[in-house]
Image (cartoon, rainbow, N blue to C red; front, side, top):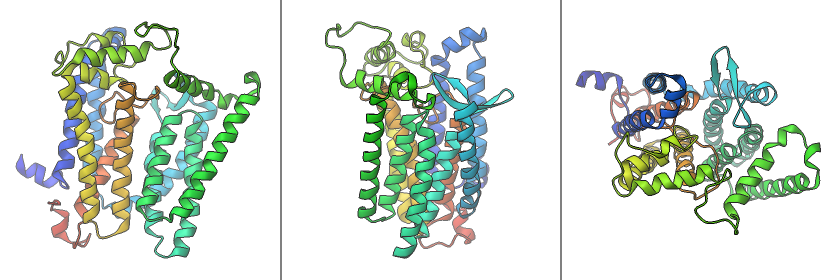
Amino acid sequence: MRDFFKKYLQGDPVIWTVFFLLCMISIVELYSASSSLAFRASNHAAPILRHIAFLTIGSCFVIIVHMINYKKINKIAYVILALSIVALFFAIIKGISANDAKRWIGIGSFQFQPSEFAKLALIVVVADLISKGTTPEKLSKNFKHIVILTLVICGLIFLENLSTALILFSVIFLMMIIGRVPFKKLGKLLGGLLLVVAFFVLIMHLVPKEKVWKGFDRFYTWESRIAQFAHPKQNQAKYVITDENYQVMHGEIAIARGGLFGVLPGNSMERNFLPQAYADYIYAIIVEELGLVGGLFVMALYLFLLFRAGQIAWRCNDTYPSILVIGLTLMIVLQALVSMGVTAHLGPVTGQPLPMVSRGGTSIIVTSVYFGIILSVSRYARRGKSPNDTNSTNGNPS
């Protein structure tokens, strides 16, 4: 067994540990949280077996990807990015609608979210472009390419999934800061976007709702959620559950029931009331069953992943692997923090799953690829070591 791990599971052992712990927590908690799915399927084992299958596929992707030198990944990323743009357009026009949003494309019985592939490809491409800005002239030229690609991808995602677009843009923006893109350029970009957003909101309020293009229908959903979060009804009793706050209130009830050590796995009550207990609100079930201690432990896993990624990035000789590993990790961690924050009612409802824990197909596989690339960087890009050094390929960063 030790030889197996040494041969096939190389790279940073801490990243491997975080990955497998998240998978284990996911299996236990999703088995409990998916009771409503099991009831509808008339098969209590079907939802968890499906989830285990995707986690297994994801684990295989981690193993395969982490064996590939990260320097070869950027070439594939440009192709995936181009295909993702086409897929995002297709999803908007003829995508499968669920929860009032067209985010999926169906091929037979298989469905996937093109936004997940677009996020991965954009982060890799941006890391590559930043690393190639070795002179002010090249950096200025690449900055324009980064802005164009980011606005196109985030703009297409924005039409159906505002929170994902904002998280992705935040990650790219942070990558540019870390990549030492001049603050003057970043300031102009941010200022210009704020003006465009303000103009868009103004137009949406001036144009009658029935005359608005259907692609902008989600705007009213976003506005309603933000308004409900920022200005709850004053004349409504604090603990009255309505159709508008149903999900939020039951999420808070789940957290309150958890206490310090929780009611233990399998004993959740709110899994029977939360509509997305196995997806967007699985963190509420985690806190209910594992308590504050379990909730903090899960949060610590993501934060420690970020800390470890920072250590790996610091050890890299080149800019590309450093920016790449930080960008991918930020995507995982920011999404996790947003998901947990929404569950605790620290922000409006967004529909963000908890990476590697919530039920999903595309998201689990793509997030597994994130881990695989991070492990590839930890395996091949070590300070003072050449990527072709056979010793570096078998070692782990200390």
